[in-house]
Amino acid sequence: MTEQSKIPPRKPLRSQAWFGRQDKMGFYYRSFLKNTGTPQDQFDGRPVIGICNTWSELTPCNVHFRDLAAHVRDGVLEGGGYPLEFPVSSLGEVTMRPTAMLFRNLAAMDVEEAIRAHPLDGVVLLMGCDKTTPALLMGAASANLPTIGVSGGPQLRGVYRGTYIGSGTNIISMSEQLRSGEITVEEFHEAEAGMNRSIGSCMTMGTASSMASMVEALGVGLPENAAVPAADARRNHLARMAGRRIVEMVHEDLVLSKILTREAFENAIRTLAAIGGSTNAVVHLLAIAGRIGVPLSLDDFDRLGRDVHCLVDIMPSGRFLMEDFHYAGGLPAVLRELGSRGLLHADALTVTGCSLWDNVSAAPCYNREVITPFDAPFKAGAGIAILRGNLAPDGAVIKPSAASPELMQHTGRAVVFESVEEMHAGVNDDSLDIDAGSIMVLKNCGPRGYPGMAEVGNMPIPAKLLRQGVRDMVRISDARMSGTAYGTIVLHVAPEAAAGGNLALVRTGDLITLDVEARRLHLHVDDAELEKRRATWVPPDHAAARGYLKLYLDHVLQADRGADLDFLVGCSDAPVGRDNH
Ligand code: FES
Image 1 (cartoon, protein in one colour):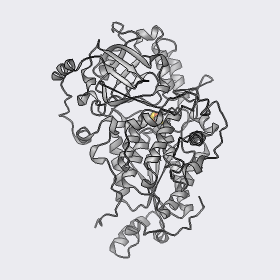
Image 2 (cartoon, rainbow, N blue to C red; image 1 turned 30 degrees about the vertical axis):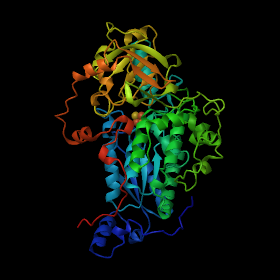
Image 3 (tube, protein in one colour; image 1 turned 90 degrees about the horizontal axis):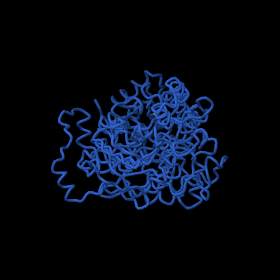
Image 4 (tube, rainbow, N blue to C red; image 1 turned 60 degrees about the vertical axis):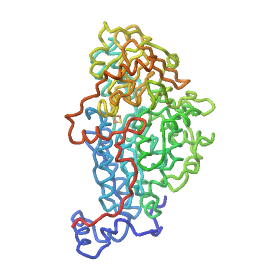
């Protein structure tokens, strides 16, 4: 990257269809921006860079994004561009009901149309909390301008009474300790303050950190995008360098579709396995690929991830946190391990203008406890596994690195909950007929069922089993789970129960076999009996839905296709459009 691009434009800039005109419309377009203090020379043909901001006080993980945007702005100005910041829908994972995932596609529409409607030549995407990253990448992919992703960075380590605690992961373990009487409510409250003690996103390898890693592995973000903490000044350096670089990318016409290739997605899938990343990344990568026209399927995750070891000892699968990961060398050190084993498409182009391998081939590793060598991995063969069988004809996912080895091959008696409300009402009832070998089954939590595919697949262990010391059981659903969660949990069953999948037909007492090695998920009920049950199945009643919810229910795809809306799949670039007066 240079301080100021001297490369002449290869083609007329898109923004000149607004600002380059010496007529009535040119007057309109320039004059109204001059009220912000913009002098005439900003309209002289320099790249106009949109800074797409998901700042919101309702998204605490992105609350520092006004500062981050200011650093991008400085970089754009230093690079010779004209920065214009604009807001888009923000998606706060913790506070949005029924689930932020219901609104991912809505936010993606907002991003796509905002980019397309305005006089922008390139875009910097500011994203952090879980769904903000896929929403912005999906929208930007459909508009296909030169684009750089800048993640907000993870929080500093959580600290409670001298020990480090991880977002989400320790919420789950401490809430179970509270339920079993091991800790008091006062201790619980003290831990809350210690966990989220700085700006940034969850500092475990949850969905936010997994997706920030995907941004880097896809080549859409600058090196080190994934792990530099939000509170570290180097996060601001990265934002500033992204501002400089996007100006060059406009001059180079380095549009997103030149970076988001099939090879880039294959690199991302292998990286996801190597970091023990969130199962949510499967749904999001499928959706992003769908937008940019890259064919990608669930089976690609199994095939490409199968030979990849989990190299990073980080919660929820391991011990450390994102801050440790950064100090150890961050994602470049992991990519170097993969690339040196021939597990990356080394020549995949990135936003730096160089190949992925050029970016990471000399990346150092400073701590082999946090980032293990490929020959002595933290966990062997831990890529996300895709299961199939009569319970999931279109697939289901499990994260072996977060599961209990002794449950990876298990047959048990189903204990079925028809809804998440029924599960919550019954799971702590000591009269529930369940033991440690049972398999918990949750229905109606998929894309259409919840609706929105909530993160409820990591059902709590029944209280009476917790008291017996049980800490993991096989759990199966059409839901997602938080990337910070752990356990032997089968997710994203497709087709979902609400779409009439066989999951809808499971009854308490049925036997189910999970065999991760054989990639099998089988319900021991014959076809004739299943058809008998199907005849009495009643689909959910969505007749009262209106507005966005109706649009969503009418068009959402199943999890194996990324849960995007069917009419949003694809890319139509960003033509300059017609005048508005
Ligand atoms: Fe925002 Fe975890 S809740 S990243």
